[in-house]
Length: 390
Image (cartoon, rainbow, N blue to C red; front, top):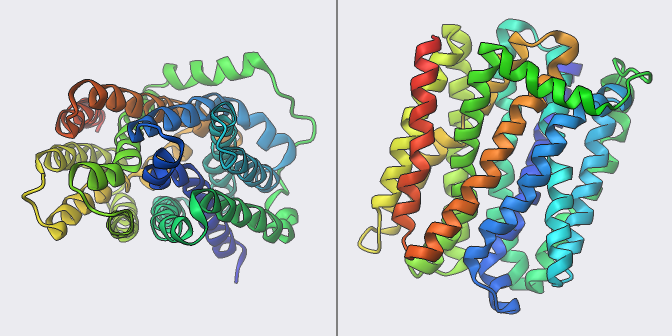
């Protein structure tokens, strides 16, 4: 296996485990809420905490990646995810809050680190496709969560689900060790963290028109993705009265549909050399899919609900490789991880705010429909801005 292929596979798997770690709570939420006597809608608060921590880590991780290497930072991140999952498994509310923050800090560097490795190794004409293949780790991670967490809850209780996920993260951190030397050749031990550099990253993203529109798109698109990840299982169990195993299976099927979709959109963007046009079309598609899911209800059959979920994931969970390749294209080569982190910080802001707003809407109205409708609006705005930049 050549180095580029090995990099794509390794980064795909670490991306999958990172995304899975953030989904253990949303998928296990009905069981956790029952055991701890909590409202399942509070999963939006948990997700908000995860991505509150992720947002700040995204903009600050670039210097650590440059100093210690992208692979080493990936390993440390996996260990942090495991620690956060174990904290949540205690069932103590203060430790659950702390665990959410630690998980967020752990998941954040996975994408900037993998982008740094692939930007160095990928031929430019293959970058959108290879980044998209690597980013299939997100739906793969969601499929793992949808398949493994309900089984672990049934077999070991809700705490067991968090233990299983933590063990998987620690195991992967160990397995990645032999790759440290070839993947971290470009690390710079002289690099230092600087608060001014963090602010400079945000400033540079906002000042560059190409990166600014990517940041706006990341905010809207990641926000819609987080709504699906946080509330689809709860929607099926609470509003549509399906059991957790059925809801988890539906979630996994919908996330599985995003895998070929991501590769297809990456291929199209590379073939047409029109990443922004593809992203604009995806923005329109995901807004329509969110509205469609909001229109669904208990009169819809389970296959119809799954089809709506697949339409959602094939757009709102399938854009990442195209956007990340575009960021890597326009950013200076030595600043790819930093600029990627800066753009993704806006994505983390969307990932943090959308579930909180959705939870508030759900608590105030009891309506999933209103939440899905409102979540679609920023994606429409981003699509218009992207069309204007093409």
